[in-house]
Image 1 (cartoon, rainbow, N blue to C red):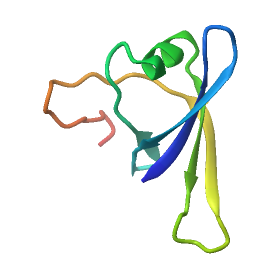
Image 2: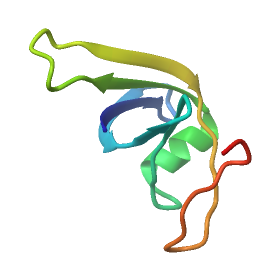
Image 3: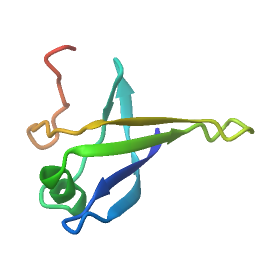
Image 4: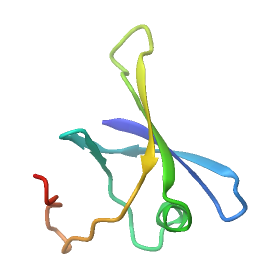
Length: 85
């Protein structure tokens, strides 16, 4: 799914970026490189907003989610597994 992630930088300024995510069992997953701007912002402040637009809907529908992001580590090339899955 296409999504837009909003997080804040070290000065408290919002930063929004597009990303590709997976939605599974009511949770949203996305990947990033360790040390990326996105990872640094989330490490400083895990409160984020994510907007999932329905690009196939002519009425421009979307879902907006607010919550705390946290990191899940996995081996390179591996699949992310959640304890609840």
